[in-house]
Image (cartoon, rainbow over the protein chains, first blue to last red):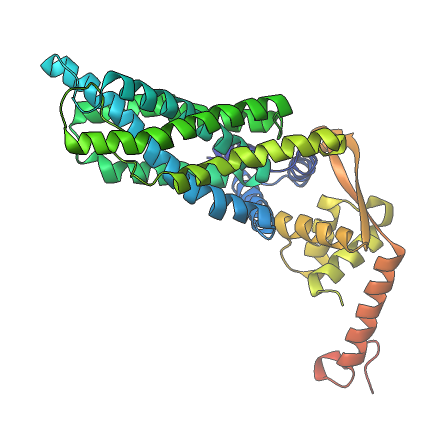
Length: 269
Length: 109
């Protein structure tokens, strides 16, 4: 029990700054604390530090501005995209053909645009989260995962188990992996290079234009005639896409602005 | 004006002088004030005092009895000493004539 408490205390103390962690561990060693008390004391200090962090505006911006709206819109879009890939795959495995809705050209346009947007938005959201508030990242990360799981389970009960597994597999590849890579990148450096930021802006800008131009055309055509084609459009995304896409873009814009500022002011790095 | 716990920490740090660091201050406060001093309260209050310019802290050398880990050493600044003195005087003044202060320094006969 005592050893387990020490192990836990050691793990929890990793949430502290390195110097403070060093001082606290030394204090415990010197005063011969029991494992239980060391764990309680460490938890108390970490909790106080977290509360103090939340007196700043950045964690709140990350929570209210990024985690809430971007997390919701992005997880819905990622789930919809995964669904639009998984259902035709499932249908072709069971019935030997995809689910007809779009023509090949329309499908490729939608598919390519969303396959650029979802991973890029996911990666930039993960990195922006760390960039805004690194020390509250584990709180944000936990809330983010819970929020995404909640959004997924709202849709999941409409699906068969195999369809859901296929969808989750695509979602893991297109959404959860890029978010994780973004967070890992943010642990190393809070900034992206100016060139990378502008390349991402151009790629996402082009994908957004393709989507906005194509979406009305496709939805009108599908409404008129739901026949020949191979892919469903992203079924969870509505007709008005401009505002959601703009909201999901702000972490990328923020990173681009931060990259330019960091280049002008090297001390920020 | 200082808070009660801030005053306790400043006084403990001043009393310990060169030996003022996290564990020593905590032990001194627990022994003399007879109250529990958590690590969380200690270090967050030290940060607050430092941001007010009342103490200076820095990482000292590692010692074997601490498992080779460094101490966070504390020194009371001149401003900190003035603030503690003002607090003490205010407590003495406000306590004059009350029953629990009878027979103590500053109490009215």
